[in-house]
Image 1 (spheres, one colour):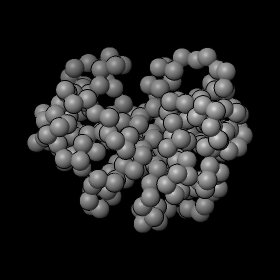
Image 2 (spheres, rainbow, N blue to C red):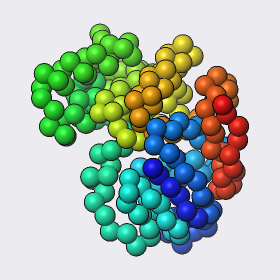
Image 3 (tube, rainbow, N blue to C red):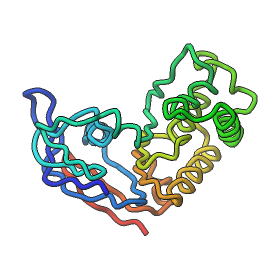
Image 4 (spheres, rainbow, N blue to C red):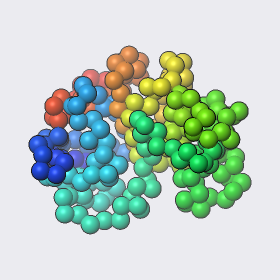
Length: 221
């Protein structure tokens, strides 16, 4: 479970970007995160993948309490999180295959398991003929799919994705959402930040909506 209790966040001495957020992400839940540009979506994602600490309040994160003064084992917790960044953040010196394999190598998976799982996943997202290409030689949509494959290969406890369908065509976008949904069914708590209202309506999952740093819940089946 991930629970926010009156959480606010600011950068340095600036104004609060997020204000008194209180909500709970139950294990295995699926939410969209929406809001206009500048509403605070990226800042909330940063709190969720532990790139920032709150300036006020408490976050209970995998049974660990995170407060402005918390000292904790960030790498250990981050290994439970899969992240799809909007700017991909792939390693340009590594092939698509090796980028996706990184989470499995970090946990010490056997080479044969890495080969089988990475090959299967890259094939599923349509990159079976591009898996040995490096990111500079891949299109934006191909890089997006590599980033998604890397985020989910280790079946994380929490998956965060920032506009994961923004660089792919609608057909591939729906296929990727199906992949997220299947991972979610296995127990991964999933938060997808998106501007795509059509996608939100198609999936029908609950929505966390930010407006000027404040959070409201919207519908969803």
